[in-house]
Length: 317
Ligand code: ADP
Ligand code: MG
Image (cartoon, rainbow, N blue to C red; front, side, top):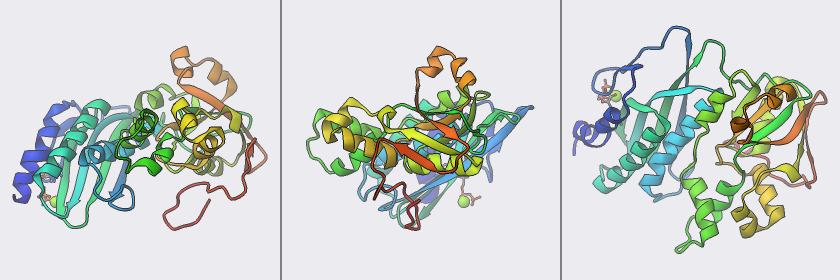
């Protein structure tokens, strides 16, 4: 199967399934065309997943299709952006129809679930690598950034943390238990917090998605904002399945330092927090406060030897 037939068979159909009035031209021409409405800023980001580095070898292509778009969309969520469209650069060792069918299925489900339309891409041969650029919009100057946190604010996270980290040790399980299946689902099918991110525009002072681990990612907000923080380990939201699998102490350790959860971590003034609609507040857990004293302090856990985050060049941060 040639490159053009491959695109036509597996990828072009995805472009038609999520109609989007901002996408004036999708795959097939030299470029895609997006019209950004007046009064909106274009927010965009690219993420690359390399086999053996960001996902295991022989990873189920349906999971890969979903995860690749979810990981990229999570950055839009962290900016408070409304999703619009994405481009897809795939590098494949071969044109394996079974693999392509699974990948396109996972990608297609994610595209529909997140409201992101495939706008175009690039298809090449080589070691399996997926790059996805996502485009979103926000009203002018309303995006959530990392540098807006002030001292004396609440630090909140969405959902629960640590499940995806625990999944790493049972990825190869032949017959996962119910609890293992729950943490595996968090790893295979992360749900970027797109609605929550948009609901926090104008309220959160800073935001980031938790991809490398809470300590590492909160650390980026603190550094960009020039504030410190105190995090209360007792308040970290962990799922009952995770606690049953690894115990309370290990669950909290994973919640602090494991990645791949794709929840949001935000800072928010205490009055702004109180005035959030109940439906938004109920998606958040307050886990600590920011302070004028620099540094990230964790109350209730032994920090020594803790690996704070994943860094591609081997530093711990
Ligand atoms: P060019 O040579 O101009 O870069 P390509 O041959 O790479 O064009 O791509 C032809 C068309 O197919 C373009 O519109 C491109 O966006 C689309 N395309 C290529 N690969 C993909 C893909 N993986 N998914 C969606 N569209 C793709
Ligand atoms: Mg090309």
